Image (cartoon, rainbow, N blue to C red):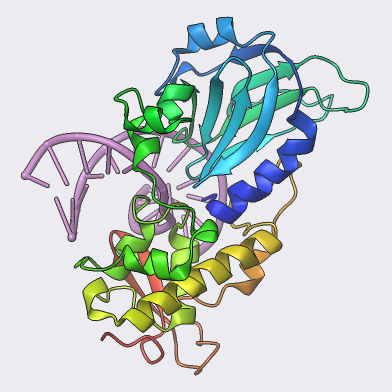
Length: 290
DNA sequence: GTGGCCCTGTGA
DNA sequence: TCACAGGGCCAC
C-alpha cells in the first residue's frame, strides 16, 4: 500500500532519528525478509559499527545509505512498516528485523523495527555497484535489475518528458501508470486519482490519447503525489508513518475506493472495474473511453 | 499483453 | 467462511 507519498513521509520521519547513527546490531527474526543482496547471516556480521550516512527514497523504496558503500533498501509492498519503537515496545510476531543503534544523548529512539504482516516486503543489502551509484555501475552487470529498471521520479521530471514515455505504447493507460519502468512510485490509489482528475478512462489505450491528454495526465499525477505528500500519505488499512501516525490523504479521495458513490463532479455513481488485474474506480460520464 | 502466485488481516 | 486487498514476478 505505501506508494511514493507514503514512503516519502516515512523517510522524512526516519531521517532526523537515524542520520549519523552507528548500528550496534541487527536481529533477523525472519530470514525470508532479507532478499536480493547479502544473505541474512552475512548482513548480521557486516552491519555492526556501520554508520547511516543518509535516509532517502527512490520510487516506493526507502534507502539507508551506510558507510563502506553499503545500502539497505526496503520495499514495504502492501503491509510493510518501518517504525521507531518506544523504549518499552517489544517486537511482535510480525516484526521481522530489529536494528539497534548506539545510544545518542540527543535522540531517544535507539531501535528501528521492520514489520510486515503479509511478508511481501523485504530488506535488501546492496553495494554501490548494485545500486548504480556511478554511471559505470549503471551499465555494469552488477546492477540490481529491479533497481536499474526503475523509470524516472515523477516529481523530478517534467510532465512533457513523462508524457513522452507513453508515446507509441499500446497498453491501457492505467497499466502504464502502474508500470514502474515507465515512471516510478505510482500505485493503485494515485493512479485512480490522477486518471479521475485528468478525466481519462483507466482502460483507454495510451495511443488513443492526444499529446495534450497525456501531458495533462502527468500534471495530475504530479499534483496528486504532491498533495499526498502534503497530507503525509493516505492511511487505509495498514499505513502509518515512522512514528505510528496516520496520514490524511484518504479524506481527499475522489475515485479510489469510491465505487458506487456519486462522482464529486457530476453526481453519477462511480463504476468499479478491473484493469490490469487491479480494482479501478472511474466515472463513466466524466472519464469516457476515447 | 493477462492471470496466478506469494501472504494474512479484515470485513461482509 | 470467504472474497478481497495488491507490487512484482513468472509462466502462459
